[in-house]
Length: 326
Image (cartoon, rainbow, N blue to C red; front, side, top):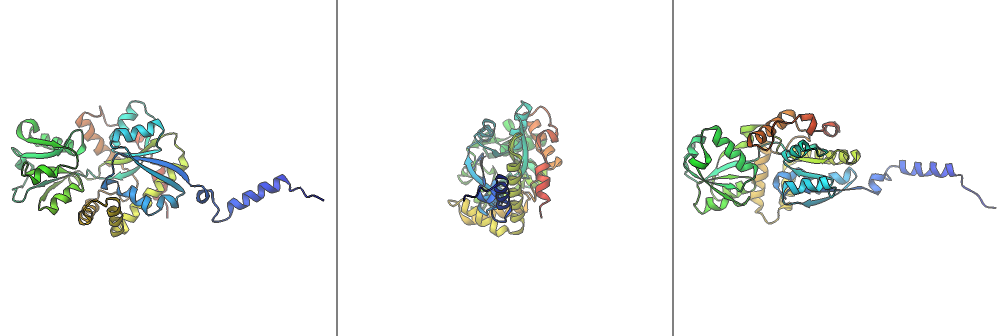
């Protein structure tokens, strides 16, 4: 005599198995997402920590990292659908939104204007005016470091094209003219800054402290991206930021592993500097103050006609839930 298992009983059994701890769908089949980063950069350490410490995995995500080579290409990957998230300056997202792209920023990544000015030993510096007439090594435009430097000079009444000699080089190569004595001053990102410091150069000015909270790099995604995947991703980023705050040594080791060709001591110094200067955010939130400061710079540079409305670019729903996690 055969026994037919009732259909409703099968459904109940499946539901019960799914509810058993350790058999959740997140653990059995993590959601696959692709993240396109503009560059492999020490600035993006929160993202690397989330990957290397397993915070994304803990949230049920299988994250694939891709390096685009530029912010525009990274963002284009999201717009085209070949990537779920992109990491780059928020101005690229704001510009795309102003042209009708259905995008949103869901997480902070870099919360300060992470640019510094270094000078040769013996260079006498007391204020910005001391730079007038000097030869300056800067990154090739367009790049935020050179843009901020030009903005600062003009605000101080110094015309870059007339009062300075600027040597523009590939980003990351700014140290070259400094070491070759072709320039006395260089405008730099990390880790180039601490590479210069290791060669005896002095840091004479830091934009992070000058500007305060500044939306410098963010996570962008489409408005129709799976909201559950977004929340899991933002949760992972939040856990990474908490980890950097509570275990800077552990974060440094991850940075060193992500950049194996760099001098470990240079990486350590760079991470320490960026933690001290609050470059890495304490949470995934992008405040209205930080957004406004960053966007005003873009308006000044002519990249935006006006500062966009905060709520039209930043979606705080996901960051609010992530921050509320215990």
